[in-house]
Amino acid sequence: QVQLVESGGGLVQPGGSLRLSCAASGIIFSIYAMDWYRQAPGKQRELVATISSGGSTNYLDSVKGRFTISRDNAKSTVYLQMNGLQPEDTAVYYCHVRRRERGTPRDYWGQGTQVTVSS
Image 1 (cartoon, helix red, strand yellow):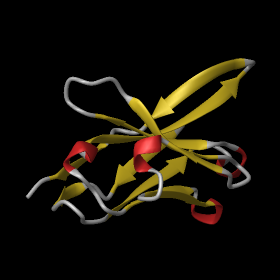
Image 2 (cartoon, rainbow, N blue to C red; image 1 turned 45 degrees about the vertical axis):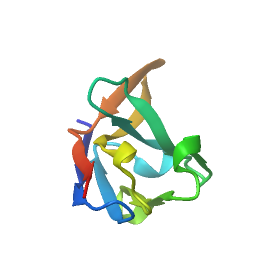
Image 3 (cartoon, rainbow, N blue to C red; image 1 turned 90 degrees about the horizontal axis):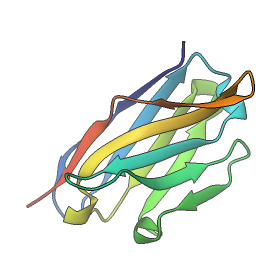
């Protein structure tokens, strides 16, 4: 059974930093791209960052230069380092993986971790 467990959210002042972690189990972690999404109140969930199995990364334009996604295959964990946080970064952050099962893609999500940026 695939499980994704996020941690590291919290309350931070504008300009501050947080590091989110997502520990995966039930999958061969190293062969999958991993993503971080976020959902702010009243808004649709949006893709924040992606890291491929080979380590290539992509980011939402509004977080480029501030957020860094990384992975540790030995620990089956993906990270999101968030620097220069702003109130508009306030959201629930979700870890995501898409796995193909008998030819059909299936999405798995963590439970989410709240990030609140406020003075």
